Image 1: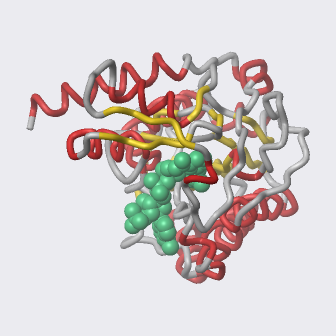
Image 2: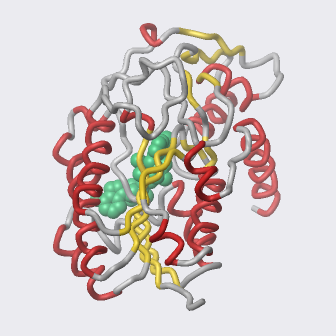
Length: 293
Ligand SMILES: NC(=O)c1ccc[n+]([C@@H]2O[C@H](COP(=O)([O-])OP(=O)(O)OC[C@H]3O[C@@H](n4cnc5c(N)ncnc54)[C@H](OP(=O)(O)O)[C@@H]3O)[C@@H](O)[C@H]2O)c1
């Protein structure tokens, strides 16, 4: 099997950074951060794909500032809707596979059962709408595309709930955390390792299994319980459950965002571990990383 050339966008993001390492095991990675490739620059996007001519494009870039997106609609659309469409068009021109990520925020959270890929989308905020429109644009263009919806991504870099809770726990006596939004946390490294495993199965296998998939750890939690799991069994800070109403934000968020990964598991024969297992491994990796600093 020849090693594919893989174009990776968003190489500095939570998932993108992890993908740089995991994808390198299976192909020659051209890793582009925002400085190297701005997804808001349509000409640069097309030009980069045409000059590199990758067999696989992994789009880990996204406009992920959920609250800011409410006032930066044009920017969110450019990165989450238009750029993925251009990547899909360019991928189709050169018969490349496009791997793209989306979110549980495409749903309104009114369900009481995990969402599968056939569930109706109804985003509550600009971020979710622009991501949903990105999915639709990719599907309309056709070609060999794999879209993975995931949820509540955290990791050891960037800005995420885990790092915010660890920082606040060191600063404050009390943390007030929303307890009425349920979902599943996903460690960026687990996502990156899973995607790399799929790429390692070869480009023809990716082409055969093109489609939309939910990719998530198993189990479910809420932000309050997730915070308690991060901080551990300590007396200080005190973690206090609050409601969404008590923590108003510019963007509305779904009350429930659990994704059913059954289609992914049946198709690829891979199951992500339970979210608590992933969190324990991530916290252990953090301790290891601190030892080497
Ligand atoms: N984070 C979550 O909780 C979550 C949940 C569900 C799904 N997802 C999806 O999972 C995927 C990966 O998310 P993530 O958590 O890794 O996001 P992230 O950490 O915010 O990373 C996104 C990356 O995109 C880059 N980017 C933004 N605008 C760009 C532009 N104009 N040109 C080039 N790069 C640009 C950012 O660059 P800078 O570093 O320069 O800002 C950042 O490195 C995304 O598709 C996201 O929608 C995320």
